[in-house]
Length: 401
Figure 1 (cartoon, helix red, strand yellow):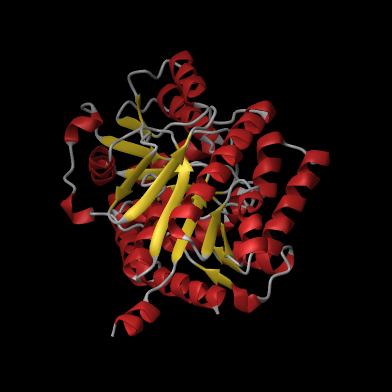
Figure 2: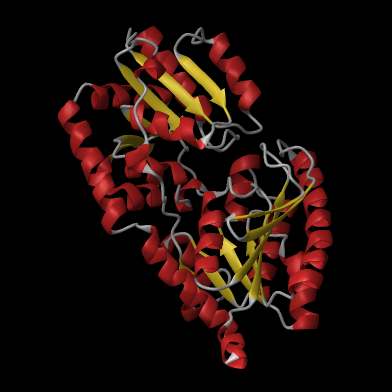
């Protein structure tokens, strides 16, 4: 009986993630939980950052090791310091995890496409299977951040190709990323699985808090990273256009999150005379975030139109939909694929156009109700996490065959 039970036990897996810690990285944490529930022993290596600084802990049956990392990158040398410190921490902790857990799978989550350097020795010398979880297309992200192609861009393309070559199976967040894995990564179609990032949030437990509106009629919200490719500066400029050019004093803005551009964005708000209209609470607890999502009248996804964002499925888009909120997006391919008729799409990277679209949505309560209802229904029936779990487990079965 003991031998039979042992044969049914699934192996240990190691998940590597560099740009966010768990459980803050919801996609990675949901994947870890799904694998744990399926019988795998799950170990995660991630950075010490954003309030999650315990070097080692076990949460909900998932073993977590965290390493020191330099500051979040804001330029080339910032990236160099961040990635060098991250790779050193990952390699050191991966060896500790190997000695303690003898994992059979390494699940690497980008960006950056450098984590194959940590996984490769275990693949070559111990037969460990590698799964490449493509959160973002790193070459497109690099081009969007630095605005050009040069030698470093092609080095980034090479690291993406090497990561695909190292991996037995690829997980893609959407169909656009799947196409890139097949075409540019040269992976067989039957080894690329779409595992969408779908929120599992306690929607019905959250209660609205009218105080967040600061006495104004409407609350427009943003939640997400504040980097130089996220367009939060466009949203602040849109708020300025709304208040100073359109004369609207009835909209409060709540911009939640942090990142390398946070201080610069605060300065932009103050320079434009918007301190009373825009709140920046920084890193938020889940309780505050869910209350804010329940309270807001419209969610804004201000990621500008470019080759990188066109391929991204934004977490905030799905979170607004889960809470039944209408939203504004710049017209991105995967943004439209996710939100469908639950959003209004702005056709150009224009702060004025974003402000005008916001006014149209806020002044049309029937449209807001319809979009919110359609978004919640779409999350419940088409983009739910249960469908993605099925694909995740199939990917693991394929990798281990």
